[in-house]
Image (cartoon, rainbow, N blue to C red):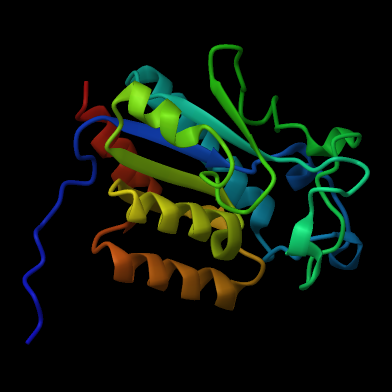
Length: 207
Protein backbone atom coordinates (compact mmCIF):
# COMPACT_ATOMS: atom_id res chain seq x y z
CA UNK A 1 0.00 0.00 0.00
CA UNK A 2 1.35 3.45 -0.94
CA UNK A 3 1.28 5.89 2.00
CA UNK A 4 -0.74 9.07 1.56
CA UNK A 5 1.45 12.07 0.76
CA UNK A 6 0.52 15.42 2.27
CA UNK A 7 0.34 17.98 -0.49
CA UNK A 8 2.74 20.83 0.24
CA UNK A 9 2.92 24.34 -1.12
CA UNK A 10 6.00 25.21 -3.13
CA UNK A 11 6.98 27.66 -0.39
CA UNK A 12 6.04 26.66 3.14
CA UNK A 13 6.64 29.42 5.69
CA UNK A 14 9.66 31.64 5.10
CA UNK A 15 11.99 30.75 2.23
CA UNK A 16 15.68 31.27 1.56
CA UNK A 17 17.41 31.04 -1.81
CA UNK A 18 20.57 28.90 -1.59
CA UNK A 19 22.94 29.68 -4.48
CA UNK A 20 25.39 26.77 -4.57
CA UNK A 21 28.87 27.16 -6.04
CA UNK A 22 28.10 29.61 -8.83
CA UNK A 23 31.68 30.81 -8.99
CA UNK A 24 33.81 32.66 -11.50
CA UNK A 25 35.14 29.39 -12.94
CA UNK A 26 31.64 28.55 -14.24
CA UNK A 27 31.99 31.28 -16.86
CA UNK A 28 35.58 30.74 -17.96
CA UNK A 29 35.62 29.24 -21.45
CA UNK A 30 37.68 26.03 -21.30
CA UNK A 31 37.65 22.72 -23.15
CA UNK A 32 36.06 19.92 -21.14
CA UNK A 33 39.37 18.09 -20.66
CA UNK A 34 40.91 21.22 -19.08
CA UNK A 35 38.34 21.40 -16.28
CA UNK A 36 39.03 19.92 -12.85
CA UNK A 37 35.33 19.03 -12.57
CA UNK A 38 33.24 17.70 -15.49
CA UNK A 39 30.26 19.79 -16.59
CA UNK A 40 27.20 18.88 -18.66
CA UNK A 41 27.03 20.77 -22.00
CA UNK A 42 24.80 23.74 -21.07
CA UNK A 43 26.27 24.28 -17.60
CA UNK A 44 27.03 28.01 -17.84
CA UNK A 45 23.68 28.82 -19.45
CA UNK A 46 21.85 27.05 -16.62
CA UNK A 47 23.85 28.99 -14.03
CA UNK A 48 22.95 32.27 -15.74
CA UNK A 49 19.25 31.42 -15.47
CA UNK A 50 19.65 31.66 -11.69
CA UNK A 51 20.11 35.44 -11.92
CA UNK A 52 16.38 36.01 -12.48
CA UNK A 53 15.63 33.98 -9.34
CA UNK A 54 18.14 36.00 -7.31
CA UNK A 55 16.58 39.26 -8.55
CA UNK A 56 13.08 38.02 -7.69
CA UNK A 57 14.16 36.85 -4.23
CA UNK A 58 15.46 40.32 -3.44
CA UNK A 59 12.23 41.89 -4.70
CA UNK A 60 10.26 39.57 -2.40
CA UNK A 61 12.48 40.00 0.68
CA UNK A 62 13.66 36.39 0.49
CA UNK A 63 17.21 36.02 1.85
CA UNK A 64 19.88 35.14 -0.72
CA UNK A 65 22.65 32.89 0.62
CA UNK A 66 25.68 32.34 -1.60
CA UNK A 67 27.61 29.12 -1.00
CA UNK A 68 31.25 29.01 -2.11
CA UNK A 69 33.42 25.91 -2.30
CA UNK A 70 36.97 26.89 -1.38
CA UNK A 71 40.10 24.93 -0.44
CA UNK A 72 43.43 25.98 1.00
CA UNK A 73 46.20 26.25 -1.57
CA UNK A 74 48.32 23.71 0.33
CA UNK A 75 45.53 21.12 -0.27
CA UNK A 76 45.36 20.25 3.43
CA UNK A 77 41.55 20.24 3.58
CA UNK A 78 40.65 18.13 0.52
CA UNK A 79 40.34 14.89 2.47
CA UNK A 80 38.92 12.14 0.24
CA UNK A 81 37.59 14.62 -2.35
CA UNK A 82 40.37 13.82 -4.84
CA UNK A 83 39.85 10.05 -4.66
CA UNK A 84 37.25 10.12 -7.44
CA UNK A 85 36.94 11.86 -10.81
CA UNK A 86 37.64 15.42 -9.65
CA UNK A 87 41.13 16.90 -9.61
CA UNK A 88 42.39 19.90 -7.61
CA UNK A 89 39.89 22.79 -7.79
CA UNK A 90 38.58 25.89 -5.98
CA UNK A 91 41.89 26.89 -4.39
CA UNK A 92 41.86 30.05 -2.28
CA UNK A 93 44.70 31.59 -4.34
CA UNK A 94 42.86 31.24 -7.66
CA UNK A 95 40.67 34.19 -8.82
CA UNK A 96 38.31 31.71 -10.51
CA UNK A 97 37.32 30.44 -7.04
CA UNK A 98 35.61 33.75 -6.22
CA UNK A 99 31.84 34.01 -6.48
CA UNK A 100 30.52 35.00 -9.91
CA UNK A 101 29.99 38.49 -8.54
CA UNK A 102 29.07 40.28 -11.76
CA UNK A 103 26.93 37.53 -13.32
CA UNK A 104 24.97 36.95 -10.09
CA UNK A 105 25.06 40.59 -8.88
CA UNK A 106 26.50 39.60 -5.50
CA UNK A 107 25.90 42.40 -2.99
CA UNK A 108 27.47 43.28 0.37
CA UNK A 109 24.26 42.50 2.28
CA UNK A 110 23.89 39.01 0.78
CA UNK A 111 24.83 36.11 3.03
CA UNK A 112 28.00 34.22 2.13
CA UNK A 113 28.95 30.75 3.40
CA UNK A 114 32.28 29.10 2.55
CA UNK A 115 32.49 25.30 2.62
CA UNK A 116 35.26 22.70 2.42
CA UNK A 117 33.00 19.75 1.61
CA UNK A 118 30.14 19.06 -0.79
CA UNK A 119 27.18 19.80 1.50
CA UNK A 120 26.61 23.45 2.40
CA UNK A 121 25.68 22.23 5.91
CA UNK A 122 28.83 20.21 6.64
CA UNK A 123 31.27 22.13 8.86
CA UNK A 124 29.60 25.53 8.23
CA UNK A 125 27.24 27.82 10.14
CA UNK A 126 24.47 27.53 7.53
CA UNK A 127 21.98 25.93 9.91
CA UNK A 128 22.59 28.61 12.56
CA UNK A 129 21.94 31.25 9.90
CA UNK A 130 18.75 29.54 8.70
CA UNK A 131 17.45 29.31 12.25
CA UNK A 132 18.17 32.99 12.81
CA UNK A 133 16.28 33.83 9.62
CA UNK A 134 13.41 31.49 10.69
CA UNK A 135 13.54 29.71 7.34
CA UNK A 136 11.41 26.65 6.57
CA UNK A 137 11.83 26.26 2.79
CA UNK A 138 15.14 26.03 0.95
CA UNK A 139 15.18 26.87 -2.77
CA UNK A 140 18.33 25.50 -4.40
CA UNK A 141 20.11 26.62 -7.57
CA UNK A 142 23.67 26.05 -8.80
CA UNK A 143 25.93 23.04 -9.22
CA UNK A 144 26.71 20.27 -9.41
CA UNK A 145 23.23 18.73 -9.36
CA UNK A 146 24.67 15.30 -8.56
CA UNK A 147 27.18 16.46 -5.96
CA UNK A 148 26.90 19.70 -3.97
CA UNK A 149 23.24 20.41 -4.77
CA UNK A 150 22.21 16.82 -4.06
CA UNK A 151 24.15 16.54 -0.79
CA UNK A 152 22.92 19.93 0.43
CA UNK A 153 19.36 18.90 -0.42
CA UNK A 154 19.73 15.65 1.54
CA UNK A 155 21.13 17.40 4.62
CA UNK A 156 18.35 19.99 4.42
CA UNK A 157 15.78 17.21 4.12
CA UNK A 158 17.22 15.36 7.11
CA UNK A 159 17.09 18.61 9.10
CA UNK A 160 13.35 18.86 8.29
CA UNK A 161 13.46 21.76 5.85
CA UNK A 162 11.12 21.81 2.88
CA UNK A 163 13.56 21.57 -0.04
CA UNK A 164 12.96 22.72 -3.61
CA UNK A 165 15.42 22.53 -6.50
CA UNK A 166 14.94 24.52 -9.70
CA UNK A 167 15.56 22.04 -12.50
CA UNK A 168 16.54 24.58 -15.16
CA UNK A 169 18.86 26.47 -12.76
CA UNK A 170 21.02 23.51 -11.74
CA UNK A 171 23.50 21.49 -13.79
CA UNK A 172 25.43 18.29 -13.20
CA UNK A 173 28.63 16.55 -14.18
CA UNK A 174 26.66 14.94 -17.01
CA UNK A 175 23.07 14.72 -18.19
CA UNK A 176 22.51 11.21 -16.84
CA UNK A 177 23.89 12.09 -13.40
CA UNK A 178 21.87 15.34 -13.36
CA UNK A 179 18.63 13.49 -14.11
CA UNK A 180 19.31 10.69 -11.64
CA UNK A 181 19.94 13.16 -8.81
CA UNK A 182 16.79 15.13 -9.56
CA UNK A 183 14.85 11.86 -9.42
CA UNK A 184 16.48 11.00 -6.09
CA UNK A 185 15.55 14.39 -4.63
CA UNK A 186 11.98 14.07 -5.86
CA UNK A 187 11.86 10.65 -4.17
CA UNK A 188 12.68 12.27 -0.83
CA UNK A 189 10.16 15.10 -1.14
CA UNK A 190 7.30 14.91 -3.61
CA UNK A 191 7.14 18.20 -5.51
CA UNK A 192 10.77 19.06 -4.79
CA UNK A 193 11.81 19.48 -8.44
CA UNK A 194 10.33 22.66 -9.92
CA UNK A 195 10.75 24.90 -12.93
CA UNK A 196 12.09 28.43 -12.72
CA UNK A 197 8.74 29.86 -13.79
CA UNK A 198 6.93 27.98 -11.02
CA UNK A 199 9.32 29.28 -8.40
CA UNK A 200 9.21 32.86 -9.65
CA UNK A 201 5.41 32.75 -9.47
CA UNK A 202 5.47 31.30 -5.94
CA UNK A 203 7.94 33.96 -4.82
CA UNK A 204 5.58 36.63 -6.11
CA UNK A 205 2.76 35.20 -4.00
CA UNK A 206 4.79 35.85 -0.83
CA UNK A 207 4.50 39.61 -1.27
